[in-house]
Every structure is written in C-alpha cells, then in structure tokens.
Amino acid sequence: MAARLIPNHLDSHLSYLPGNIALVENKYIQITTRRHCVARQGDPLTDQNFTTGPCPANKVAQYSSGRLESGQIVDGGKPFRAEIRAKINWNGSRGMRTALWLRNSETLQNCGSNPAANDPYGELDILEWYSSARAYAWSSTHASCFYSHKRGTWRTRVFAHRLEQHINRQATPLDGDWHVWAIEFDGQKVRYYLDGKLIPVSHYTVDDNTTVDVIDRNRTDESGGYPSTMPDEDFAKLNVNRQMLDQVFRAKGPWYFILNDYAEWEDKLDPPRPTDPFPVQTTLIDYVRLYQKN
Image (cartoon, rainbow, N blue to C red; front, top):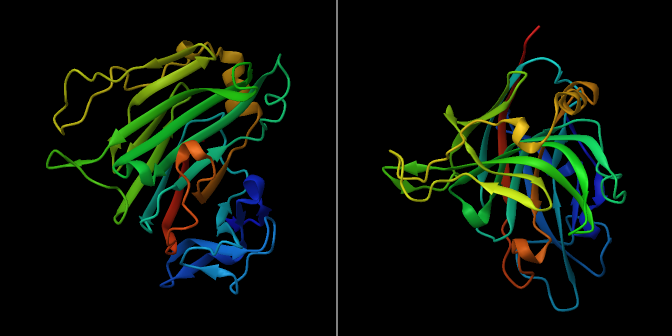
C-alpha cells in the first residue's frame, strides 16, 4: 500500500500528506491527524504551523491526515474475504471519523450532474467510525449511483449496516482497543463483521423517496441492543438488477483498499471547533489480509 498526497481536499479543509503515515514499533502503520493554523485556506500545512491548541482569531484551522491506498487487487467478479486489524486512538475531539473501505474504478462525477445518470459506482465501507457515536460500527454497500433531484447532487443506492458494541449489556466505545474488521462477498451479497460478529443491515436507500429502516426498536437482543429484521442484504430491494451488479463488482473492478481518517467539515456532522484544543489523533493498522477465491 502507498501513502497518497491529496492537498487541499474537501474545499481545503483537509490535506492528505505522506508524512502523516509512519511505521511505529517496527510493526504497525500509523495514520496521524493534526491541526494547523494558517493565514488562509490552501496554505501549506507544515510542522511549523501544527498545533494541539485553538487557532487564534487571525488564523484559519486546517487539518492534515494520512491516506493509504492499495493497487487494484480485489477481483469483485469472484468471492472474496478481507480482514483489517486496527486500533483507533481517539483524541477526544468531536467530528472525527476513521474509514476503512474498498471502491471500484467508477466515479461519482456523472451522477453529480446528469439527471439521467445511473452509473455502476461501487463502494464497500468495511468500517466508518464516528466520534459522535463511539460504540457503533457502521458499514455500507454502495451499489450504483444516481442524480438526486432533492439534493441537486449524486446519491447512491446503499445498504447501511450498524452494530453497537455491548460488553456486559452496556454500550462500550470501539476506540482504544484492537479490533478485526472483516468483509465477505459470496457473489450474491456482502457481509461485514466486527471481531467475528455479523454487522446487520440497519436501513437501505433505493431512491430519493425510499429509505427503509429495518431495526426493531420494540425489543432487545441478548447483548442489549436493538436487533435488525434484515441481517443480510438483498440487492433486489435496491432495484439493482444482475446486469448492474456485474458492472459494479466485475466490470468496474478490480477494487482497491483505502484506509484514512477525517476531521469532519460539514456543519451537520459537528466538525471540530477551531476554538477547542485538538490533540493529535492516530489510527494503527496491524494488517490487511485478502483471501480471493480462484
């Protein structure tokens, strides 16, 4: 895997810098997220303008992090399993996100502007962890995109999976400990796992007017969480046919891994406040393993 350089990402809010990726203890890859106080958006982010404190009134808060990408190594036309062992060391700030994911070669560009778009975009989020919901593992399968007339931009047909970690029937944060996040594709559906436990479907979106919640909030399971009435995906529910699935998984492959951290930038996602302290955050990666059926 290689560290990517993506400066001035997300309207210059965040830059991915190779220097924010390091080998530590001679065995773990570390992704580091830092704050920088600069004179204006788009200024270079350096050790000299790095800070763990608030930015003064005459400075703009920008963030640097690391992003690892593999080559196109996952054949989505065949069943596969992948495992990532990782540890999130949360810095205590709001608006932090860790993402471990796969995507195919299709982009969202056409779906973002063409009202007639129906493209084979594919994204498999093995984990999205949010500091606003520290006990929750979120995974999702994005299988094709379309133009959203309600939002005026792209949107995906998606199964969202959710699992709240409970220990002794108490919700327990996922950060601070090592976990193994896994994905399996059997050629028909995608499954996600946290330490061997299935992460079930939470809801799915078909189009602008159809999002279906499948969580049963009238009872709890043996761990104390609300169970899903739909643990497994069924692409027919997304109105995604076999031809489109073949485009998403096989024709637009091979897929590649992306491992990265975010400091959120949208107000609705409660980004870090520039007036609050911002300690360094790290995510450690022990291994990424891929098992591909011949």
